[in-house]
Image (tube, rainbow, N blue to C red):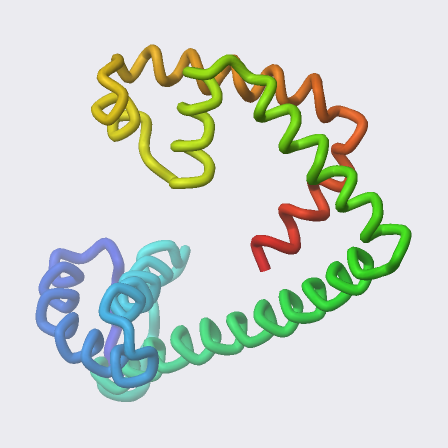
Length: 183
């Protein structure tokens, strides 16, 4: 019977001695190094957060391998549930958008969004398009346009404020469009 006390000095030693083995095992299940590392960290974090010390009746290594196995399997199960929910939601959302009346509203929204963007002042519009459509960071936009990052931030703030005001009547459709795009 092994007693793993999270407050003992040996905890760090146990972590260091077992991390590589546990990480390799988690990697065989997940095929992702960072995710495998996260699962091992989660196991040790849960041990640390326990109010009472663990009372292990098998070998410490066997206990830790089982804990990592369970953590990985729970993660995989959660991802499958999440994926199923996302697929279902995307299908429902697509059906709503593809409904004739929704399709017309969606096309109307696209026209209003395009007009609202085109109505922005030139520099403001350029900054907005580089940020949102080309997914550049503010520093990259600043370098590309030869302006300061603060100026880029000011242009984005101005653009978003104006677009919010222009498109407030279409907020529900914008949210629907964003949800569909994320899935």
